[in-house]
Image (cartoon, rainbow, N blue to C red; front, side, top):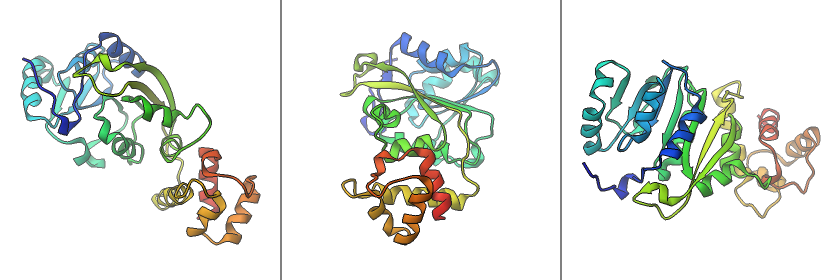
Length: 260
């Protein structure tokens, strides 16, 4: 059955077998392990994940696709190898996920940031994430030019992002107006000693990037005394002319511990 994509759900159905193969290869699936898929759509990636032996849990919000997927994968559902959840992924809570698990998905691009935050900040974090995202977003996360952003810092604080491949807009039906890319986030861990420290980290990073043209020291005066910031800069080896985009993720974490 042919489906018309809903713009309101950010639907662009993946139609490239090669892209699907590269995604599953990057996920390094071990038979029986739990994989969480977000927005399975018509099921092209779902089928590949199940073929690799995954114990799959997929979240699909679209009523139309829920029915089609239930029929298409009735055998796997009956075998309890596939659980199809009719729910918006952003309406889930920490109680819905239990480690170990991986997240592998072609995600709706308009909620990329929310999905990254949800899983990376979760109490039970995935061991690995392989995601199809907008190419521009992938470039910002990887930051090959050495210039960090709030997004790249927010991801790299928890794990190591790697570009797997670029994917042209012609690999989707309907074709989006932008190119895409597959990224893999590995070595995911919790670098913070408490939720309070984690919250403070994001408060400091947001303040640091609040006004890009300003020097970092000036920006951080909204969250700490100038004398404390200067002392912290000296202790971690940052100069007074440093800008937020030039500070590494590990340095942001170190500053958080000293400014806490």
